[in-house]
Each structure stands twice: as C-alpha cells, then as structure tokens.
Image 1: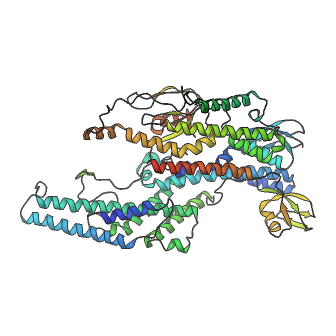
Image 2: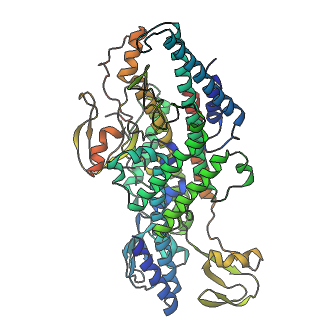
Length: 225
Length: 179
Length: 224
C-alpha cells in the first residue's frame, strides 16, 4: 500500500520515549525516497499519455487523471512523513545541547544521520554565539541554588588552610561554616564531616510523594486517551 | 538586570578584601545566586520557546518585535539551519517540483485536491489550551466564548483553569496572572 | 510559563516550586546585631537582638542554619490559632463524608498560604526546634494535605465535556503543579471532542444528534 513505509518512520518516532532517540532508519528512509521518485515517474508518464491523446489535463476526468492524482497525493503524503520524521528528530537532537552538552557521546553520535550531526553542531554554535553576545552562560545553573555553605566538624587537625581570599585554622572538633565546594576535599578524605542538624528525610518524603502522584496521573491519562 | 548583578558581584569582591563579616558575605552571595538563577532560567526558557516555534516566529513581524536583538539573530540562524538540514536530508532527494520547504509541490494551488497548499510542518503554539491563572482584581462577569454562552464571574484572588485564548487580553493588560 | 502547550515545558520541578516559595516573607528573631542588608531582592534589617524582623524565607533559613536567629512559626502552623480549628473541621467534614456517602462531599478548599506545603517543609527541615508541638502540627498538615488531594481527585472526576472553566479557590502552588498536566490534558481532550465542529461531523454521520447550541451550564469543581 502506498505511504505505508513512510508512516512506519513516524511510528518509530512516536513509540520512542519522549526526549529519546532511536537510530536513524536509513533503510526505510531511502526506500521512501525511492517510492517518491517512482510515484513521480508514474505521475509524469500518465500526464504525458494524456497530453499525447490531446486531452486537456486541467479538465479531463478519466482513469489516467485519477491515477495521476493518486500518485501525486501519495508523493505529498510521503513528503510530509519524511519532513515530520526529520523535524521531530531534530527537536530531540537540539534538546541534547541543554541536557548533555556541546559534545555528544559516541552512542548518540551513532544514531544520527550525517546532516543531523551537522545540525547539532550548527545549533550549538548558535546558542554559543547568543551566550557570548549576552555575556552569560546559560548551560550552568539548571537547578535552583541552595545555600552554598555547610557546617562541618573537623575530625583531624588539619591546620592553617587557605580558602581563596582568606585562610582559617581547622583544628580538631571545631565547627565551621564553609563553602560546600571548599569542603569537598576534606570530606572525601574523612578529615571533616558534614554537620546535618536536621534530617533530610522529610524532603524525600514530600518529593517522592509528588512523583507518585505525577506517575499516577500519567498512567491514568494513557489509559483514558 | 545583567549590570545590576555584576555590580553586586563587584561589591562582593570588595567585601572580601575589606574583611566584612563572612556571614554578611555569604548572605549576599546567596542573594546573587538566586538572582542569577532567575535571570538564566528566564533567558533559557525564552530561547527554548524560540527553538520550538522558530518558523512560526520568523514569519510574524509582531512576534519578532517581542524578541531582543540577540534573540532575533538566534531565531534567524535557527530557522536557516533547520531549513538547511531539511533541505539536504530530505528535499534535495525528492523529485523536481516537490522540493520546497514551504509548498507541498510546484503545482500546488490554494487547494491541492483537498489538501491546503501550505500544509507543511510549521509548529505553532497551542493558544486554545487550558491554563491555570489567578485573578489580581475583580474582573466581574467575563465572556469566555464568542457567542456569550460561557460567562464566568472572575473574583479577585481566585484560582481558575480557563482557556488561554479567552483570557489572553486579561493577561496582557495585567488583570490576571498565569501560574 | 503555564501558557505553553508542551507539558514538558509548563511543569515546574518540586525544587523550582520550593525556590519560588523561598521568597515568602517570614518573621525572625535575631540573636545578633547586623547592619541592614541591601539586596537585589529587597532591603532587610537592620537587625537587633530579640527584636523581630521580616525577611524572605531563604534568608531566615540561612540565618537559622548559622545559629543567628529563631524563626517565628506562622500563625497558620500553630495549634491554638483559629485557622487550625478550621482545618480540624475540614477533617471532621471529611470523616462525615466518608460515613455518609449519600451526602454531597465538601468541595471547598480551606484558605491556606499558597505555598503552605513548601513553607512547612522548609520550617520542619531547618527550624523544627522553633515550632511548638512540632510533631502534632506536622501530622495535621500531612492529614490536611491528604484530604485536599483526595478532594482534587474527586473534583477531577466531575470534569466533563461541558466544563469550560474550573474554579479552584485556595488550591496551593504544589497542588496546582501536580494536577496541572492531567487537568490540562483532560480539559483539552473534552473541549476538543465537544467542539461544534466535532459534533457537526458526528451529526452528519447521524450517530450523535446533539444540538450544537446546547452546551449546558458551566460546572465547577467546587459547588457555588
């Protein structure tokens, strides 16, 4: 049946989880392109036949006219499917710039058509040039900031430590309020520990609850619609 | 806003040098972090809207005029790149007469055997959808449809779910907030 | 933000909702002296020991974490306030509703701060020792939240093709964020299938002879 292969491409896009990508289906894609050219050949030959019979192609309504119309419309349908396939993939690909970064890992690269790779590169460049014009990096700070300072208890005598513009003395069992980033090295070496006065389990409780409701909503909506 | 935050950044540096209380420095740092996050989120969201509706925006002078100079340039290069991509991956392989981005086919007229001739993908924002909103002041009886069958009494500080299209005017005049 | 058709763009993450709530003003009692803070988000202070002062929640939490203040529990989170009695009556109503299935369920949401979930969460996390009867208050707030979610769910069931506007008086930020995707898709689907064009088409095939003009009265989630 005409147009079936093209719709197969769209089904592939549709069955993929939102924001994910399946490998570019060059087999089916090329078949659809061939189908398009075949339709055009058929269409042209039917029109030629009508012209040879000295029929007015604008007004004649014979078998050949309807045959030509079927080929013409099938070609248009294939074109729409191909365009929608590429466009929808391009949307996912451009979202990778925000989610992954300017360099795509190998396993994603493998799934792309050469033109898609180029599109990703050009699109990233457009974002980059916007950011440099605005003098602001928009690829950082994706989640709301939290208090950058944490309270730490010093577990071993560390001594005088220079932290950027000033230095402090970290003696055993003393408590300090320091930038989270400054404390990471000491915490990972077990020289300091993070003092958490209050349990964070409450946060998890609320959030996991919301996730549940959201999933419940999604599941529901899939059933109904 | 950008210059505002960079001023504060400088102030923060001064604090560091003049040995102002660490506590105060950390509080100002948090204020700055929050502001930068808001600013970045705002700009990011606008870019993502442009990415999504680039062709639709590029077609409309009114929509383009709402973008900053930098955003307009971004929208323009996005559209060009998308067209180039579709061109080299699909259109260049199609037969002559069917290889236009904006027209179905060369012979397409207004009505191409039942298919409108520009029925090609140009994603547009869906304005006819429902949104959550909050009234700032009493609006009174408000007509939601064209024929006056749907009338809702909008009371101050109430929360409603309404169709965006019908309340667009109220949002633009600042009588109602989207939430 | 909510004006987007794409549900992925129009939804906020729980941490973004919390971020917004952190701008709500609360009262603190500092235990230190500190100059006024002239910040991008506003001017606060000067601060004096034992003199109450109003600051955004994020600032209150930061000072609390550094041991520089206590946070005053908002009225609506205290046991002896009138507000809480109102919530208790909600719970009672809820129980009545379960007992008497014939009776119409209460559909009103009681007035609570728009960010009550986030504010109470942040205060329980960071200023638990400043809240009197913290345990009881917390379990009450959880109960209230559950009852309200139940009401949202039953409210959703009443949406039909004739729902063109839904009034959700006093629904809070987090609750809005959670029902948003489902609610918008539902209303949209009903609206689409109930539109004159769709009915017209059905008319033509003779399967649904509903008059186009009969769209009936608007239905609310809450009884008017």
